[in-house]
Length: 115
Length: 116
Image 1: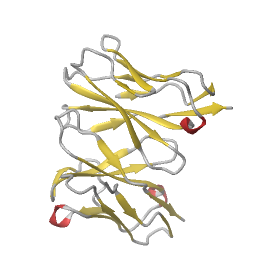
Image 2 (image 1 turned 45 degrees about the vertical axis):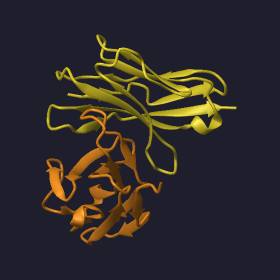
Image 3 (image 1 turned 180 degrees about the vertical axis):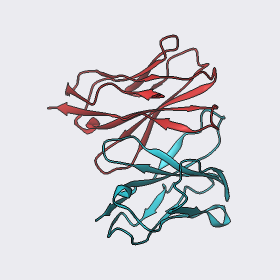
Image 4 (image 1 turned 30 degrees about the vertical axis):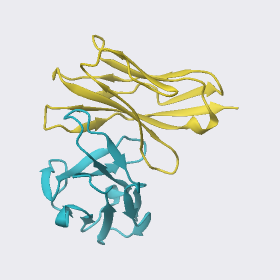
């Protein structure tokens, strides 16, 4: 079964607009961490934002925020005021205790920012 | 602060040949990971080291892949013999412990391997 599901293979957004990238996850562990990474065409994975399962507030880091809905098991990434440099692959990931604290990645969403 | 270093950046080999990748993690990071990322997919963990001990190698194809981390710093990943399906990007990451679920990984630029 898919642990991390990213249903949008590709997304387009106009420069300066906001965009939401979807991520749903599956775990029976009450304690877990959720991450978003950006992978530009250069290939390096860049850490963007972290949300803990017990965190009361949604995480924010600059233009990035994580819309965490625990009951729905969703952890969507919101990018505000999109920039051309935001064009990249975005991966949602989860770290859980079941199976030994592995970090599992989704298949990714490719974001295209239009000028 | 220097990031995670990997070499080579690109490698083209023929099937049944051997290849080795090198990784130097961020200074002070005790945990080191090797991932395989096939085109169009997310990274898949191959092996995780804590200092120079193996924590998880459950997804490492041990008949052809091997990895070591001597002295708890640099690491090498070897494939011998390579198959066509090994064509992928091999990513190295390192992390420092913050909290058990908050172990943010920092990735290197990856090695793109093409097996012909």
